[in-house]
Image (cartoon, rainbow, N blue to C red; front, side):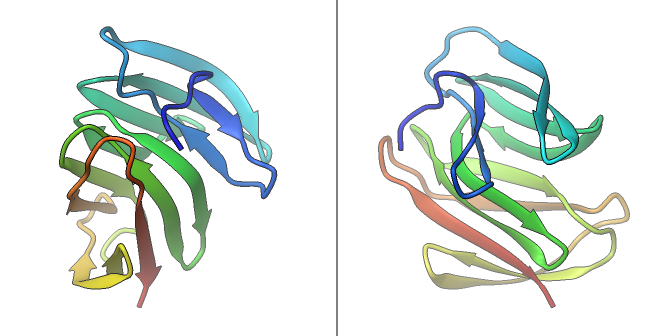
Length: 137
């Protein structure tokens, strides 16, 4: 996969890919249109953050590259890559239980807080994708 040099893009399957963890300074792109929504990306080696229509969607510390982000009523799936382990926070439905699978393994059930945020830790190595699947219970 590698980094997303254009910062954010639409894939042929209708998903989006975003993030460049190799950048030394914060870089952003605003008003990226996809599926009738407007996205804003901020990314560099320390953080990657995505917003949709002004609302929080994704944040990783340190920065990551995400491929094939697919958000539905039932959850979210994506592949993530980065230079080191990352803490990833997603904006989902508030006070809802989700089953978390990382690299095909069940990582347990997590309930979102009142703000709808769910945080997971993912073990990463440069140029190796890790699949994350979060499904509403």
